[in-house]
Amino acid sequence: MSEYAASQKSALNLKGLGSISAGKRKKKKAKESKRLLEQAAQQNEEEEKKTYVDKRTPAQMAFDKMAEKRQMERILNKASKTHKLRVEDFNRHLDCLTEHYDIPKVSWTK
Image (tube, rainbow, N blue to C red; front, side, top):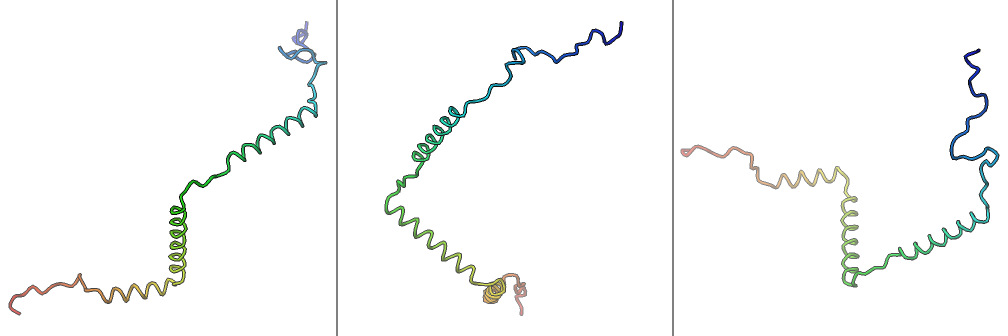
């Protein structure tokens, strides 16, 4: 007797799958399209619920608006100067300052 005589020659039968003839069942398109419509409706409802309601007072809104305006002015002011101009202004400022790193006079006699 051959070593391979006891081997199985057909496909394996796995537990829980039933017979091979049952195969995979096709989904019904009507149910799937209905489910998709329901999902779309739910998403629309969720989006309507998520709309942002501004609960700030008029004073808070005015404050935020002015702060944003001041910030934009500051940005434009800084952007108007080139690096070269900033360095020149800084050097002029340093020239006006007292020189703190100079050695003070130590002698009492002169």
